[in-house]
Image: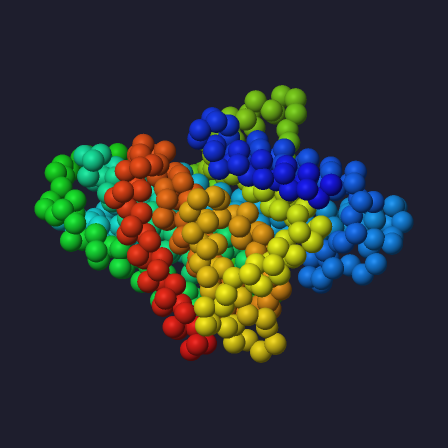
Length: 469
């Protein structure tokens, strides 16, 4: 039965990887994979001899000798546990996405465009790389990429020139997302999963991530594509909201407040994100001068309510949320949870650590078994080929190191920045590919080597500097 579940997972994973080839949205195989895997677990529960307790990160003693009803009850409890942990991530992402959409509703990101006055390509390269690095740490790498490429399209009119900048934005955005607990979905998973803390994440990864962005940008600045000036024509900008700048700073500040709220209260991050969303939404409603009620309305008031909702920035922002991504995360995280619950990932990790040599480096946290740096770097390379979300989800079930062990920080860096090596390897790359119609092989030939250099330099920096913490 375990073999069948693994086959279902691999086939679903393959369908997700080949999303663009088979023309099937990745959320569909993710949801099918999740439902089928758990159905097989429930139907074949009597055939399993091991069960993994995620809360204790250990195998359940005597699971094979339990009666059917007790096993089924344990399956239900485990399913509820994983759903709760997954829901924490999804609610957090929903809040962050809504705040970003509210900022965009007030045209807040146009404030960033007003900062760019130069025509020199090298200066534009550095401006966008630095902006991508900083913004992705606040509003996540996917959103930062969308925002900056949208601005780039208004500044660099020639697409053949623009895609070079887009390639470096992908590298910088992924590097910026790695050192922030809210900068990348995988880092957020590790943070919410209590594997890393905000301060230690910044201590361990800020310098490696910074070099992962600076070195490729520095090398790129000497390439012919970034020589000379762009043909830049000033356009009459459309009138923007008088509150655009205010909402930009309020929204970004509200998102940054979330890790502070968690540190002070020790509550899950989604609680702080909901508070931040409520504050931003309140100001949005005040500034828009529109009435908004979240309660349902019936009868004669329905039409009036719908009219008011149409002008509500909160309703407008909620309607633009990327729900397919949310459902994809639900499917893939719960599918990985099925493999984790059967102890498959735990056993795989043990085999992996015994097979791959330590490369002369050992985790120096007292009482912790060493994990090869090569294993983590391979995870980073793997994230360029397949989605990094399930890879990190799997690592949560594979390794049992304590919170803030350097392993978790290296995983955050590798999974976050390794995806830059192929354009399909990260959400930032995929969205840039869609926005600019960037060819896979063009990116592979022109940009991948820069991303690889950044990844290697960042990894080497991490291995050297981790002894300082």
